[in-house]
Length: 210
Image 1 (cartoon, rainbow, N blue to C red):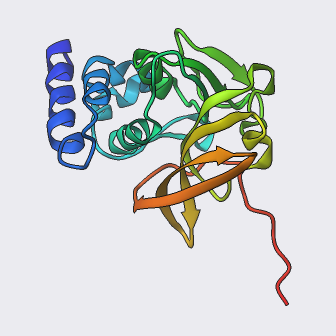
Image 2: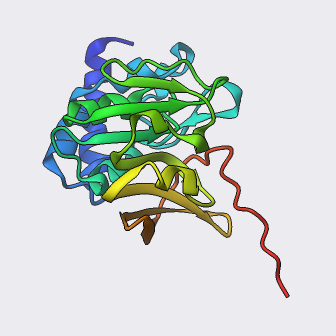
């Protein structure tokens, strides 16, 4: 497949997936029109780079659909110089987009996670739920997928007033959520049901029910 083919598919993604689905931040649209998603997809699946569904990666992981990435970026409201803690960096596509928006990115991926190409980002390998406390405090927590709950260990690494964007798994449905941390407490608002990959290692602890 030629570069022209990929350019056409990238333009189609912007027009048919992003603009029609409430991704209306022009900076986000410009970044996603510029960053080559095909460079962050396994070679055998490059033809799927701009299809609006998740793309399987190594060890049971997957790359979020483009729409999920676009909505997370829009809700993150990234500003120049923001320190972003990116959880579940996968192949580095979201890290590249965050950097294109002017963020200083710390990208966390598991030791056995996908090969990560995150030029311009600080890469940390380890448990996703542990984050990267050595770089704290962060202005934005960007969880690139859906989790059952946001661990206290990640919240503790955020500055007061930090923005949080994530997917939440609720009764088997993944939902886009955003919120802020105030005085160490995270408040999240559910925005819409949205197909997102589910990240491992974030199961909510079982709670005793009378």
